[in-house]
Length: 348
Ligand code: AHG
Ligand code: MN
Ligand code: MN
Image (cartoon, rainbow, N blue to C red; front, side):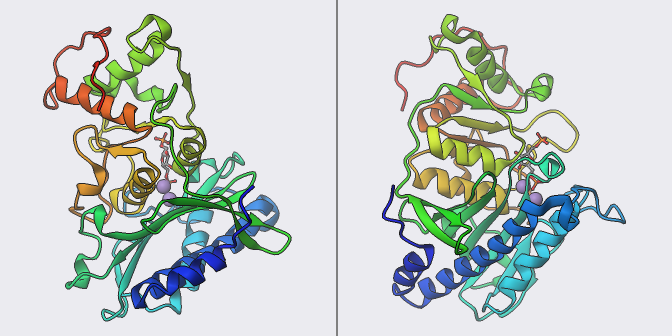
């Protein structure tokens, strides 16, 4: 077990790096404090009015998702905890526009206050995702920059344990909330994702809508030891990005939410600014990969705040192989794919 370094100790040390690090540390501390409050609320569920039902007016967020009671509650709790911090801009999945606050402040924050909303009433793991970027010269462009501009990223999983996964650009650590003193204590440091895997996660009900390279990859996984990978695969699909990511950080794996032919899903379901960018930063910092299938997610600058993006992330060898499949099959109109094409010998 790690020497139980507390998150506070890490943030105290990190904040000594300079004025920018001081602001980033304060933001992470505020998000962690909000997550303690959310963890307590979520663990009570219906006993504390959390039903997972849609809000009274069936309000929808900017992306068209019906807002659940916990989506709105989590957004409010995080806002309250971040209110007193000097932030230049703030963005949330649950708000249409970014909020310009103090343009002279050095950082901006984007959040997915409650990830995995469809799991709330099912008592499955849900989470909070955050991305912290340096304020650009033009504050309104805060969330129009490539993901490589992030200063820190993390997520909290409200599951059997409440755990906070964090990167400030120097590896990935995992902190677990000790409910005896409500302190986050480091349980894993410098997490490394195994380069290869035998476990994939995808919503297979969309099979008929996928592009050829994705179908080919999943067909090859299903072919198991009779297929080009010459090994059997396991499948998981939790419906909470945070839970899938946590599993991948724990034992490797590949997660795919590709674009597909459904209306509105051409770029998949996940949002670039507050889901794919932070997750991709974490995956790469843990030695994994994160791609659309055609390009590195962190290289992509958002066209709009709630822009969706295909996300393929996890064990780096698998991400690279899926990119090869996309490259082999050409552009979007893809050609028919030899199901059992020999897997590339030179896996970069
Ligand atoms: P959110 O609840 O913030 O909208 O995110 C849900 C996302 C992600 O967490 C999960 O992987 C994915 O939606 C599940 O999508 P499907 O319901 O289409 O499987
Ligand atoms: Mn989400
Ligand atoms: Mn959400």
